[in-house]
Amino acid sequence: MSVISTFGKGCKGALALNACKGSGAFCAVSCPFNINGAVWEEGQPCCYTEGPQKMYKNLVPFLDRHEKNLTMFLYGILSVMDKLQKAPWVRFSSFGSFPEQEELDSTQQGLLQQIAKGLQAQIAAGKVHFPVETLGKYHYYKSLGFLPRLSLATAMDPYDPWIKKACVVGSLKDPMTARKEAARAKAKELNDQGVIAVPCPAVGSKSKTMKCGKCTACGSSKVDMIVYPIHV
Image 1 (spheres, rainbow, N blue to C red):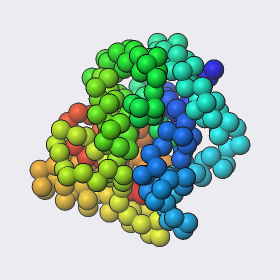
Image 2: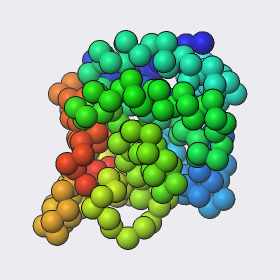
Image 3: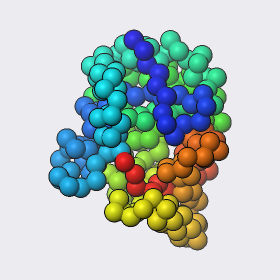
Image 4: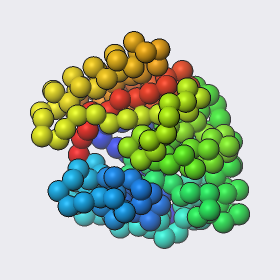
């Protein structure tokens, strides 16, 4: 089973690991962008993955194989660990999400622990981005040795400097330039409050120097908040 993907925002050599499709089986139903979730409504912004999944006909079947064969997928990640260790940037869940702890059997939990162990040098160097959308996932994957980043689109908990977070700002009705400016303004506001915040430079950029992996803020233990301009 092929397990490695690439992604448009990634720098040259960046790799992605996706356990399911966007709005797939492992995505929290509480996420407001999950079109199969409990709170999404027609006409509201949906997950940014919906566009690519409709555009590339082979993408959803590729991601569905991971979702339906999770144990094989995790074994597959271990089999390519040498490639991941050499990559300048590793992004978990450029599509979809990884499961909650209670959705995993003991074999799968053990495999995830081995994956985290194999990537420890990259995680310590800030070269791994592992976004999650619930507090439960944050605490579980952190306990395995990952440095997850919690999306505040779903988990609207009080600010805790020990939890590394991300938020989305702006409106899809506005041009990208306005959304990027809103992200910069929000980051400045947070920094003025003593929260170390970075606006994502990769969203909406066509520059090769503004790519994930060139910027490593999402994987940094020193950055409290990433501010993304809303995008699809």
